[in-house]
Each structure stands twice: as C-alpha cells, then as structure tokens.
Amino acid sequence: MSATGAIVIAIVGGYLLGSLPAAGWWARRRGVADLRRVGDRNPGYWNARSQLGVRASLPVFVFDVAKGSAAAASGWALSGEVERGWLMPLVAGGAAMVGHAWPLFARFRGGRSVLTFAGTMVVAAPVATGVAIVVTAVVRGVTGRFDLAARVGVFGLPVIQLVVDGPWRTAATGVLMSLIGLRFAQAALSARAARATADPAAGSP
Image (cartoon, rainbow, N blue to C red):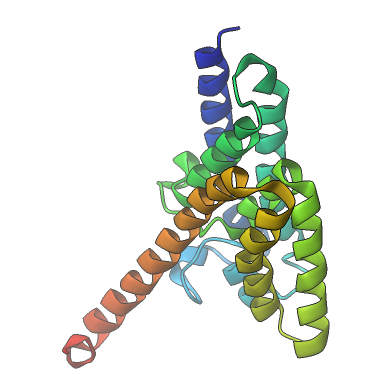
C-alpha cells in the first residue's frame, strides 16, 4: 500500500467511526428523543449525562472514548507505510474527532469531541495521557467536580506531553485541541443566538 493510500484509509475510517452518534442512539433508547433539543443541546456525553444521570450515560462515555482509541489504533496499524508514522494515530484520531463534531450519520450536528480526543491520546501518547488521567482523578477527588477535573486533565495534557514526548508531538496534539476550542466557541455562539431569538433584548449590546 502507498503512503497516500494509508493516509486516505486512516482519514476516511476515522471519520466514519467518529460519525457514529452513540449519545443520540443511547438517549433515544432511554427515552430522550433528541439531545439537540434538551439541556445544553449538545448531542454528546455531557448532555447525555445531565439528562440520564451518571450511571445510565456510562455507555456513551465508553463508546465515545472507544471511537478515538479505535481510530488511533488503526492509524498505528497503517503507520509503517508513512514517513513519521507517529503522526498516523493523530491523523486518524483527528478524523474521528471531526466525525464526532460533524457526523455523517446525524445530519452533521455532533458533539464537542472531548472524549474522542481523550480516546485518541490514550493510544497516541499513552504515557502523557496516563499522567493526565491521574491528575484528573486527583482534581476530581479534591473538588468533587468532574467537569473541572476533565478540563484540568485535557488542558494540562500538552504541558505533560511537552516533557514526555517533546515539542513536535505536542504541537500535533495542539492541532487536535484547537478543534475542541472551535466546537466550544461554536456552542457558545449558538447558545447566544438562541437566547437572542427567545428574548431579542438579551442579544443587544
């Protein structure tokens, strides 16, 4: 197989894996018709957790992480065909993140790709990610807040990775994290637009 073929397979396969809308499927099975119409309107784990509870939403957590891990693992499997093969798990995992954010199977309206990113990094940078998971667990234990702990773990990962893996791999991780930032910015703008539509005075400067 050529290097170009390996890259195309990694990107297409990763995108299709990421496009599987686990949160939406599971929420419907549990009685929530459409996560895009309730809560924060994010069709991902965070909204599923708020609507279904921690225990009932656990399959969504596992599946969203697994999408990133499976994509990254496929990237490793294809890495022998490509110069700088260490990039392939990040390429495939990044494609899965794009699929999660703009899923082919859910009208291109997806989540924020945080857990798919985490799954990607477990495979692409296991040592740095392991340390970040420990940090997340400590913050969760001290504060009792999973949302805060997750943010500390995600945004602390590049700092840890810079020490463990060096600048080039950290820079590649930063590209994937920029997608998460984009999705959060889009969500904030959408929420503001929704508030302005509901109350025109709220949208005025």
